[in-house]
Image 1 (tube, helix red, strand yellow):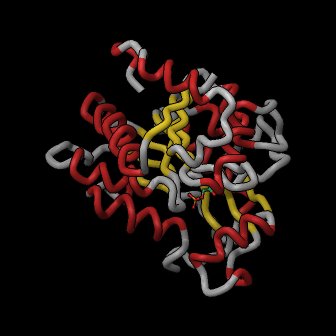
Image 2: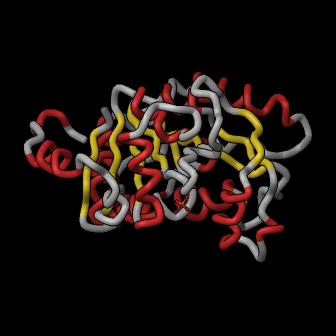
Length: 259
Ligand code: PGA
């Protein structure tokens, strides 16, 4: 079972997860991070700014979950740009060590395999940050995605395009296709940390954590992972049946376990 941590607000979630990441980097300067875009991970990146001051981050490697297909990498909403702006620059990471899947159409059929190879060569992802979509997607693995899937091109659902329209001038400007780490890729990371905030995510969180393991709800794949942590605020936790137990378990968590 994933460990569920119910926090007061985004700031507390960001501090908790940033402490864990900073600890990993201090212990191993070559830590490989799995980076997520969207609104959800921003409090983590924000909290990391202070925690990584004076820490050697020059050898940290990072792999983003996904990218739009056909978007100019210099477009402000390409995930390459987003990761550069929100993670690489503020944290002082080496841009050459941070990768996003290559969404350029030329040779796109090979870009997934190349990305998988790069992750393997880096030694695998130590900690993968995840958000969850209102339809239960993680990365851009939309409902129906195989649990064995690796990085590949997918078609975004209309729901996801509507959800992401806020980053573009209109929903028509949201690309139709993406290239995303697969659920199989995500399950290979050593530690999964899924964050979710707000009432709008409550149903997806409850289904992912307490519902059946099913490709119809890709987030439920985390139930198959031996080390998954779900950090949610009260609103995102509001539809969990066992919230009382999660609070009790976390309050009595042995110190040696870490996050
Ligand atoms: P959000 O997106 O963080 O912007 O809510 C999460 C997701 O779609 O995975």
